[in-house]
Image 1 (spheres, rainbow, N blue to C red):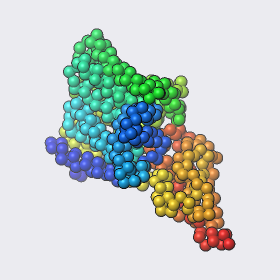
Image 2: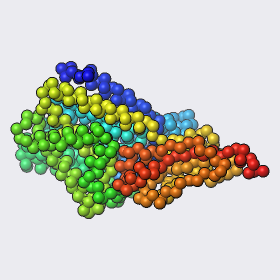
Image 3: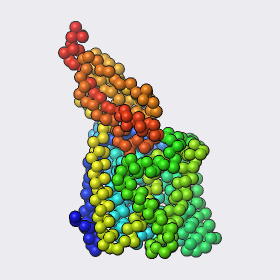
Image 4: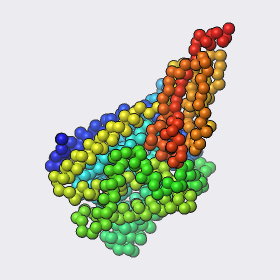
Length: 508
């Protein structure tokens, strides 16, 4: 077995990481606009149009039509401007395969920046460059590290700002100016994706703890208050801009906070374990075990861990926020978990899971890292293969429309709750029937599924699983029963071709 030489591992780590980075280009060009949440991106495109027309009021209206995510709409102006420019200059479709590629490259840039930020966090808190490299390799092997590359999601962009603040807090000599700036940036990260509000709270409390530990309670209170003032200042700017556009960010945010209900209250305390077991598989199990062992180690006072107090504080604060949210879900039934919400705990999970390796001798550390690296790469290879082959109804639909034209297609569905991407009744020119080309909503009863029975003159030419067959997507708003139903009766994308001879005979 080839072992990683800890005496000079950088070349090996960079080679492994480069392999993981390049492998992501196999995902380009697919999956864009596959899910309803992605449609908020159209507001960024419309905002670009408004800027071109110098209509400032219309610009801000589109920015604030994103349901509590105005900062994400601002960030997305970058890919939106590219997509709109090419559309305007060359007449391409706005949301074509080219648009999907532009969005991928934008997300890919966020991923690279997030890798660097994760590396800085691990290196700062563990004081071990080898473990920092290993940590970002582990992160890159997780399904949750690449599942957003195809979509116009705000989750990784928001986390990038939050983790950056966390690194600054762990590194910095605290000043009032930095407290205000970090509060400002933290609220900006919240405006990118409000679902990361738990991470906002974790960082605020952690900041207070670090100042208190280095200085005193009075100073800590003053710094945290200034941190909050930075956030409040941006809140005032945001609300003022939304009022200028004839809206209210605060009112929209209050509504949004009551809408996180599409899932299962009963899984409040177990959802995170089910996700890591069912989606991340063997790597997820290894991380959970590492996190458990690392947590036990942190509670043992004698262990020589660099910045142990900071890591322990992060762990305890994160667990407290997790339990608070889970309790609000289980007992009060106010919120539910989505996989995207679990992402905000990943930096802490990885950090704590790396701890047990830091106490091993170099020989055992080398062997352990080699073993877990191979395990992670194997897990990634399996997920990569499956994700690369995922079928998205919108992509296949556009291919059919481009090849055969609108009038040659009719559409139908096998599910009760369904939004078609393209609704078309049969015409005299119909030659193809497309089944389930749209969004299948969660269904708790298999009776809500009715198999399509082809006509005698129809021949099946395509039958592939819908994107919801990919397990990670099932943890975005589906409860236990609904995920089980998908496993039993996976939505499938089907195309039937009308037999031309039979069609002619019928016409006669």
